[in-house]
Length: 451
Image (cartoon, rainbow, N blue to C red; front, side):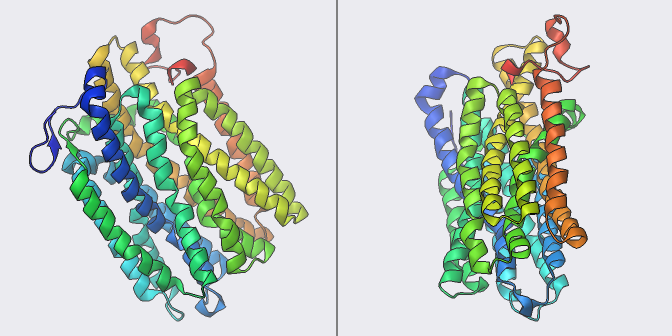
């Protein structure tokens, strides 16, 4: 392993245990640490409008539907930019792009600081909110970068820790908002806190991270990943897990305000709990998937999500804020667990396909890294679109029924479909023994032990 000027590492083979134990693990963990920091702040900036809307009282002139539309569009941009952010790692290098993507977070933060006052038009808020969407892209580039650093046997833990540390940026900014509201401060105080943190993250990434020369730009991998049915099946499942997490993170406080008449401070006291627990448990989902298989954990996770959503329907119709809050927090925890298990499935799926092609050793590992890294950007982008759907569903439900009950019924039906897809594609055994090569091209079905 060599790291010449510009911190480029020319040779990297994490599947070689001697290399991994001697130097690889130390370098990979260092890059993981600073990648988590940058992604963490990216998530905070992406979701800052989930708390800024709590500050925006009647004097801002925005209706609940306006606020749900605003957060929907922020989520949409965050989903779309994940695709180019994924491939930016290969073009610029993981370290270099982490520095750039961290520094870019200054743009939406300073813009929001400038316009956040009564009298600003809704169109201006919407435009500035769209800028915050770039924070959602940091997740995709970070996951693609870290995926290349770790061996297959460690990916569930590493990706779960990386994503969980990023996800926790959601409750952290919500906690910061709680402190600011409690101290009588305004939204500009909250935004001002993050400007120096962004600079620190960019400087630390430049100082301590590395680029992997082996992660070269490979447009063929992107095309192969887009043609593979597993990429789209996993995208669908990730809509159910991460799409739920990010959608509920934006919507939870607004639902408490609009359905249960909570004040901004009362909503802020509760809003952060679900995203915090969901973020903390994501590495556990990855660890469980490493041990028991991602598909099995994902299946039972969707069972739990369906049950929690059913309780939310009851709590919503009975107008029980206590039951509603508890069930919502449980649902958040399950989204985090499912985030970890579904992402662990991705490298396992493509590793299994490599073995089915007759590849072995480093050749199989390289094939798996190539396609799983390319697919992660697409899966992360489509999954984040679930957050758009959730906020639009809440918007329509409040317009039509005056509550979120209709949206929860729709979510319950969707989780049932996710459960059925997981079982049919990744857990159901073939009717008769298949040849080893039958896994690959025709039917997207893999043994649960492999994913």
